[in-house]
Image 1 (cartoon, rainbow, N blue to C red):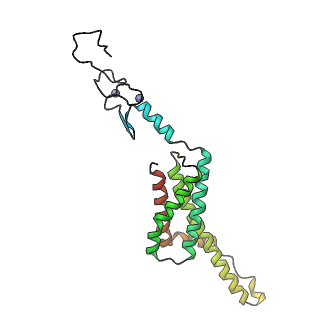
Image 2 (tube, protein in one colour; image 1 turned 90 degrees about the vertical axis):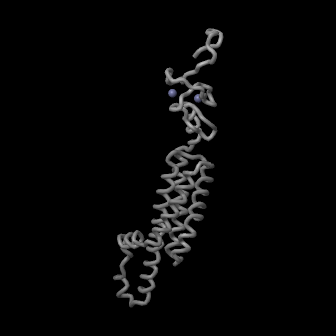
Image 3 (cartoon, rainbow, N blue to C red; image 1 turned 180 degrees about the horizontal axis):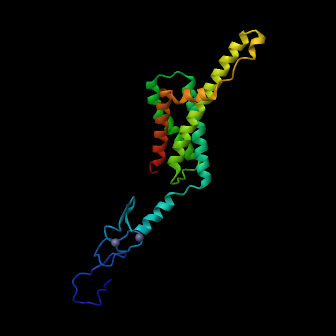
Length: 204
Ligand SMILES: [Zn+2]
Ligand SMILES: [Zn+2]
């Protein structure tokens, strides 16, 4: 860098990128003040910054701990499980499922965000989305299992005692197959996951 006193003949003070000394630039990082060329400038919510200062913002932004990830996963899975159970038990028309998906997903994400005091991590959106999907499927599966075994025991109650032992427990593989082939449920859970993931991805 050139100081004005050193060379009185220079009309303008030329400044160069701190990383690339051969590149003339007038652009400065608005945090540390160093000169930076267009390749080194990073656009941040608070203006152009050098790469180092931009990374500082990101680290401050992502402040979730590993315990937060566990909490996010637990809250999303539990609430999506309830939503999946209700979707499985009640024969809600597909149109309503489509309409309800986004707000319900929003509520799930909001609850999870509050549980971790809005701390965010790089992995939060993915963890929240996966937990929502698994929780929803599990909630629907458990509900279907209970519905079927309840129906079985009602049938069993009408049979003579000697025949009751032959009543089978619901087959888990068939329950799994029924849940993952229920496209109404899958569309609902898909929208839930989309809403939860999107809410976590959204910045503040
Ligand atoms: Zn800087
Ligand atoms: Zn540069």
